Image (cartoon, rainbow, N blue to C red; front, side, top):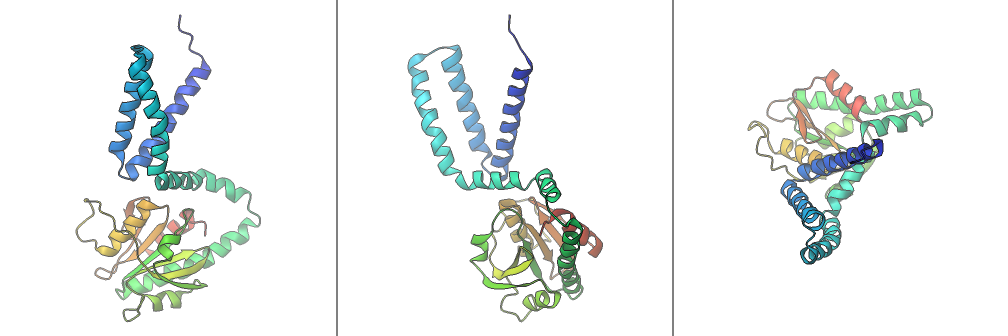
Length: 257
């Protein structure tokens, strides 16, 4: 008789959770076919070795599996690193870190004082239809993005943000990166998303914002030069036509500056 206990249930549950997160990782990195191929290979390997007990074919597949694990780690090292960063950036993990931070009220006031210049600058630029793209680093480091621009390293200031994105400014076409409550760099180049279902009325700034949100956990704010509307790209998705209140609420909720 087959003995199935609570330990077996936990074992199956943990394997299912692990496969689910690997599936999400591969899907976000557009490597879903690779994931499916790996799963099919593992199922065939288990069937050949465990059920049919073909020793020759099973031993060959055993060698392929041992080498294949190392190959997968090498090929997908960036995606694996991103997955671990995203795991640390999970909302529940961030909530736990907040519990251990001292002077929570003072930190909240400091975060609000940092967020409001961003919100006010975005509203003013949107009102005058000035195009802008502001990327806020969260857990995933954006060093490779920062290196493509000019280092600013200044306090977050509404007037400075507006001057950087002024139409005659040499840095207005690139993205601004904010790191640890400071404007780290401007004029940065972002990866452009190749997602096909982006609405046609959204331009290159929106595609760049979506691209960085797909490749990291960063949050990107876009001020449209054509429509004067404010949008946010986060987790590979858009939140369009945000008001000042909605933008402030979103930044306060999602960002630990």
